[in-house]
Length: 471
Ligand code: NAD
Image 1 (cartoon, rainbow, N blue to C red):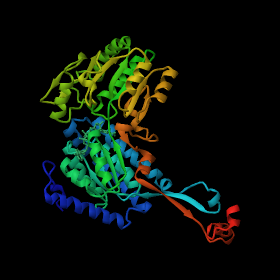
Image 2: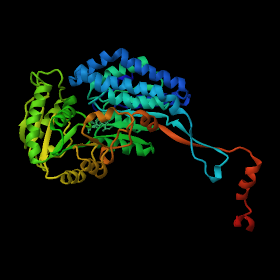
Image 3: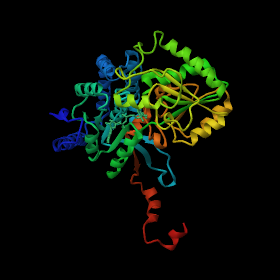
Image 4: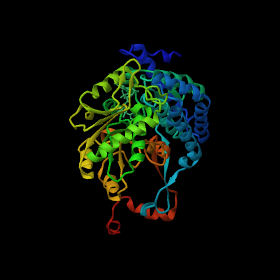
């Protein structure tokens, strides 16, 4: 079939609208056949996904290199190997996850079987982003498969090489009627969203998240929205500055800052700011001994539009480190901005690039208030050895997660749910949380025909005599 001929640009053709609708219908038919329900089927598909990552890792890494000039190390560590680990975890636990869960008996169900069963929603739509195009597409897919759904997978048109590779590989490994990749752009995705899905799992900006939510609401379809925002870092005077700087800069520079949980900006005292800048110079030199530009380990910005946006953001701030840009290569050097004002351009939007502004505050409390006056971040980072400071942020900051003395590696702890709150997201996933996300918990009550209990049950039937009322 010619699904792949769908244009990624411009207004959707009537033919593509029809094609999309047919794809959804075919996938729905596959779900209705019940094929994805048995444990054995789900396990076999997870095995296949694992095999895809194992056997075709090089092709995926090559595509990531084309789209983001991502080096092999980051491609494997942040994308391919993570999916393998998530798949292994799901395979190991699938049987347990699928077991009916006993629920507590109540007075009226004392003799009954009371339990919940994890039921697949049906046909799920996964819409993913371009920054970790393998990870963000396949990670939710693991949960969707484990939970027994059929899936339509919509990778991002902004990472075309990876999208094409997934489109080529997924049908070679996974059941073709149950899991279908559609390579389409925003306009067609809007059309796709007018179809009825049973679950929509979206990763991307909050702006598009709103559109997705609104389209899903027309069918009352439940959603998970994995979005972003400005994830702050608070650095206090007690932290180990070398370790903190290394961890912050790694989190900022991995994928050239194009990471949803990248530390967006630093809050610290004037004194810590000057020590941080000195330390940051050392750390950057250590990360890229021959200079960041010639290093194979620093990604490039995804496209011209984002490159220009970042160059614009540098405009009205004091550059302490870096600040070099090259449009031909879409290169932005690791950059630290100091004494940044909250009114400056860089503080008005999620940066999504290797630029780190520092804003001076006088106390942990001022930092906490600064964060709480803004939209809830996906993650809030705190570097401090003071227990009271750690506790104040853990309790006082609304965020998807709080991470103390560390940055992005929180995402690989799959015993923790990953997701935002407020404008940074709705719902969460990873590990068992992914299985739960893609399952409806169906309540089951089983009574038997027991004449002793029935003599109590029949008290509820009319006529409601005086005697029954007194009981
Ligand atoms: P985006 O919103 O432009 O695109 C995301 C997806 O939505 C793509 O697949 C795209 O094709 C689709 N899309 C675009 N316009 C659409 C429309 N009008 N209707 C329907 N679908 C449409 O986002 P982006 O620029 O690719 O991603 C950057 C943002 O995503 C950042 O805010 C980042 O923080 C966030 N993000 C979040 C996570 C997370 O896990 N929470 C991960 C990565 C990125």
